[in-house]
Image (cartoon, rainbow, N blue to C red):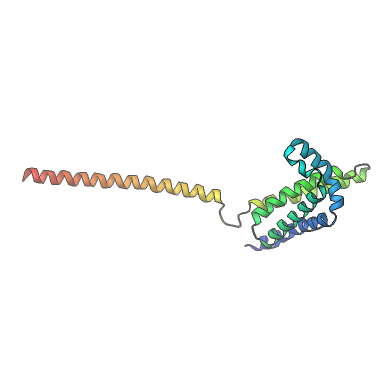
Length: 182
């Protein structure tokens, strides 16, 4: 792991870790913020109806998920998966925070916009971490190059087989000519 990754991942994760801790600690206020979002989700997806009455539990689950994913990202364990989870939880948190933030005054709207941009920047950072292969090729690249190598080997085998078949045919003709001419 490069020095940049050793430093950057814990720095990115720290904000998410603290946000998750705060969400777990103040699950009551987080639950009231989630209420409108969960109502909308319940209307759109009727199967999510059990979540509608459990805003506090959902808030705690989001916070705990964010804490776990941030810890894993900070430690460099399953960093691509944990970054993807952080991007998803951060998107939910950003949406909820933006919808519930005060926008009555000019200063409040400015603070709301600033917080939105900070949250979007963090989402961008974890999305970059989600696609970072740590200097190792990803599975898609490996599969593509494996397939290209297999095609190359197969065509090479075909050429070799044709050459060997031509040599065998030539040898058989010579032998047949020797037998017939003898």
